[in-house]
Image (cartoon, rainbow, N blue to C red; front, top):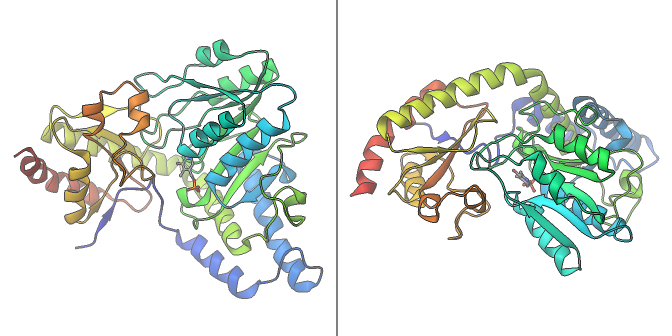
Length: 377
Ligand SMILES: *Cc1c(COP(=O)(O)O)cnc(C)c1O
């Protein structure tokens, strides 16, 4: 029987249209986009087309789109770049306790450089309160970074409101939209976003490709120095095939968003209902936001053990986040939401995606009772 992949929040399978684009550009268009000759100009054309597509989807301008190696680089560049560029104005940054490690560890590195970081608490539902952001603002605050949607529980944050608040106060606003991009609507203008990170492999494009949107007029310090690529702000020969593939995947995700949201929400709700029937004491973590996420606590069951049992049954899910798997650290996201440590260790994440079907959900619900029974004994 085919294996079932329900870990789409960790990464996704590249969609056919993106794979085709990737192969076509790699085969036919290998030039260096910085070269002056025809080979270079053709590669530059692909890059330009991709930039235009990404800008259109985000309601940004073409010259505000910078290609990077992925979400982690975009987050590092945004936060370190702004902090270092504005250090003369102030050294205070506001973020939240349940950001991805690409933000949290970046902030910890900045604390060692002498910056002061406020880590806002989150509600039991996994929501950041706009009032908490307002209350944390200080004279020396230079940046607020709040994720658009949480990767472990899928809760969608009030980024438009936080963006409006920051704009009013004259403080820059960055959002890690890696988990949100391609899944919920993003509009950098309507949402008052100054910097936004996204990553291709979370929306069916190849790994190792990302974007940092930087609003016109804002200049974070460079993270990667070298050649004049990306207007001299991010050195390194662009991965043109992967970038072209990412652009096509982002555009298709935007086109299919409404229908796919409906489909995934129905699947997720079916899975949730089924789990409740099998295990009435199961607890669902976080206010539903992203359509495919379902974070569940099975009291008395080890999350890691459940993951391994499901894996043996050919079903791939995650315990906490992929980045903390293999370590015994309990999820910092659930801890920040106030979930007790025992229950955190009994929690797993199902994340449904484009390639999941109703049959997949049926199969999970069919396997689960025996596995839970065995793990209880
Ligand atoms: C996956 C993820 C990242 C890291 O992106 P990479 O492209 O894997 O470096 C950052 N933030 C969030 C919210 C993510 O889900």
